[in-house]
Image 1 (cartoon, rainbow, N blue to C red):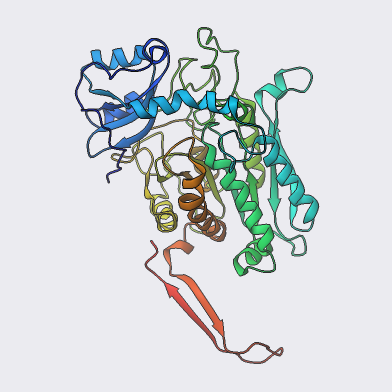
Image 2 (cartoon, helix red, strand yellow; image 1 turned 60 degrees about the vertical axis):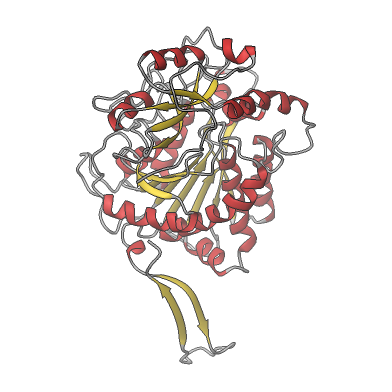
Amino acid sequence: MTFHAAVLAAPLEPTPSPTLPAATQSSAAVVAQVSFANQDDLNRMAGDLDIWQVDHGTRRATMLLMPAQVQRLRAEGRTVTVDVQATARLAAWPVQAAAQPAEGGIPSFPCYRTVEETYATLAQLAVDHPDLVQPVTIGQSWQSVTTSGGAGYPIEGVVLTSQALPGPKPVFFLMAAIHARELTTAEAATRFAEQLVQGYGVDPDATWLLDHTAIHIAPQTNPDGRKKAESGLFWRKNINDSQSCFFDPNGVGIDLNRNSSFRWNQCTGFGCSSSDACSLTYRGPSAASEPEVQAVEAYMRAIFADQRGPLDSDTAPADASGVMVSLHSYAPLILYPWGWTQAPAPNADGLRTLGRKFGFYTGYDVCQSGAEGCLYMTDGTTDDFAYGELGVAAYTFELGSEFFQSCGVFESSIVSSTLDALTYAAKAARQPYVAPAGPEVISATVALTQVVSGQSVTLTVTADDTRR
């Protein structure tokens, strides 16, 4: 499977980078394409480098590099080609954010709600639709539990389901923005909540889902980090500054998607996360050390039954229920476990089949994240935790083509297809390892407009078995 990165104007040769602003040459990060020899080589690079996109066809990876990293990679004999335009955009974002009037939305990106605006939307949905929306505080951020005076943000969410119909109901959990700089993700999750609630009683899918499914949505799972990104910084991690990253104040924090308790720091033979406190893939001092990760894991344990045994080879039963999706950017890809090993997960066939449904709606490639030719190996990830500990069908959606995606592209090319895929994910929550293997009903009509109880009717259904 081949993934195509953006074509760069600069030649692919190990020569000094094109002329850049002095600040970029001496101290600031650059966006570059770097050559890799094979999948194992890429996996090792991913442990301490900020890889954005991978093209297995050309064996080039797009990444963010500091000058010292550029020098080291070139000394290793790798081709490093700086993308001047992307680097210039990177340098311009903080300046644009500072100059943008605060009139709603993230500066320069008005289509994306801030943390405060996201939480206000969730709260208003609960006020306006108390029979469908229950607010929930999932946990606290690092700053909110370590700073006196209430600084920092809680992790707020909503549970969407009709209170008129009792459970138990299958569970779909949608989380977003665990990596702060991935702007599309929190907005997509928030719009999914709005679409379901506003469609109840009007749209058949929304009505059926809220009647028969419990949908849990946490749009901002790294709110402290997101506030950094809202200021124009390319912030990925949380803001834990206690881990000895002294020389780079913008390098502090723990990568929350390398800090989960399942298979933390356990990639065999590869550095799938970093022990360097300043690295963007720093895994933290211990498994689930961060309050954000503790909160998300505890929440998943509370809403999902444990349906898988303790061994890596244990299979979740065919009738297991529950789906978890973590929204990220960018690739674009649909990823499923395992990430920590190239070996397939015990439920690989079922995970792949449901993933291909998502791929149909989004147009994204679908693959096991740690497998040869997909992306690169990672350990301590949220989706590996959800599947590995609980047996839940778990996925990462990598949305779009940039971290700071333009509003035009988001509105025209990302949000609609993403919401369609999330709608299917919620439908599949009842039996995610079984239901997607069959045809999908795409239309249904009844000849009569009114039906008396006990009367026979003819239902005409069209089912499509090609959406996988």
